[in-house]
Length: 354
Image (cartoon, rainbow, N blue to C red; front, side, top):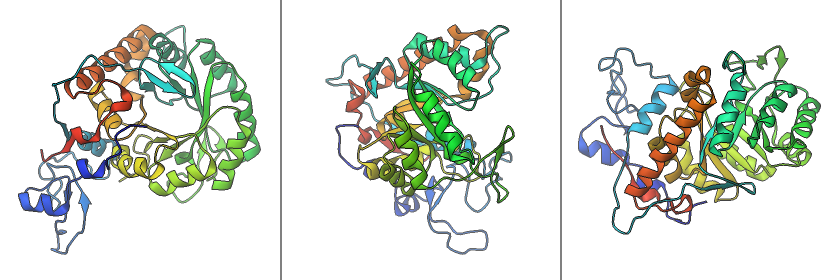
């Protein structure tokens, strides 16, 4: 984790009183509801008045977590620190391996690729070419083997299958394969949104308990990661279970009104105190977005949907974008006086009213 021990919240959070004093509807407000009743603290897009959210942008869906995640990124501004700055290093170390960038591929599944290669193979070749961490999601073992054959150091995310024995079999199979960096599970795919358990590709899912996580951690010979964490509560349970890392994610807005991962990051990073790795995905489009996550406490970021349109053009196109984003990140590091990833400083971030 970062050397700077100062509280991130003291730098990137504006109080309700501060916003109210500005008399501007902002990202954090204590405005009244349409009937004039106090609404308490509420996070809102800065251009959307709390009392009439559709008048400024008729297409705005206040429950669209993807859209709000973008708004939240764009409320975070940087101060520059040129004096005593220098050319930075983006070298990233994870689970005993060294990578050239903290910008990772995200755990996606069922991707369309080129005429000759699956999307996941294209994706993985790009990660290998950039010396970046590669993630993959649901798929058969044969597809996982094809991904590993690219040479990319890969983290495999397994669904929360109903039968824990099936989960453990997949964990053990994955963990003993060469180039498997870690295994994990996306807990946010347990439910179907209608009050029942989910069914994915014909496979029944089931919510997991902390004791289940302990069994999964014990079954794996490589680090175990949990994806889909968005609260201090779940983060602490992961820590208690011996999980090595967590991915903060709302799974592309799977649940309406889910908070942006970046909004949860500050408190979670403070709560886990550097005892496990923290990753962030959802809505990351640039090196600037990656920088904001890293400055606020993430160890690395995952990029998924942003790369999907490039997959049919081949791994070279995806790799070029990963490298371009890494260069964008390095450019922001130069401008803010950060020479390496372990020197990220949250005090450079300012939340503002747009």
